[in-house]
Image (cartoon, rainbow, N blue to C red):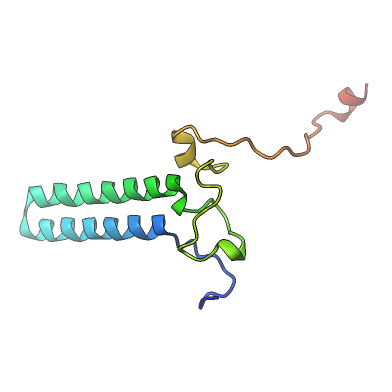
Length: 118
């Protein structure tokens, strides 16, 4: 494993790509702020937005991860997410494009036991 042991740090292609592009955007915007360049500020903001978009698109292509820890055999950052193209439960990014898989059926809570038994 890695230096983190069995802990899933969430490293994925989608996460790394979006983070690198966003960091580059913040660096460009910071330099533009020092140089008093409005065009540079807009370019930096555009790069930050592009980083978010790239991360989202890669997540939808199966290169991200669902919420929570992954099984150990899927924790390597280059391993694609097998459920990524179908959608993840509780994932806003998946729901925005209509990929909202049905949740696994679970026990139905009984709110009023007397009314159910009557």
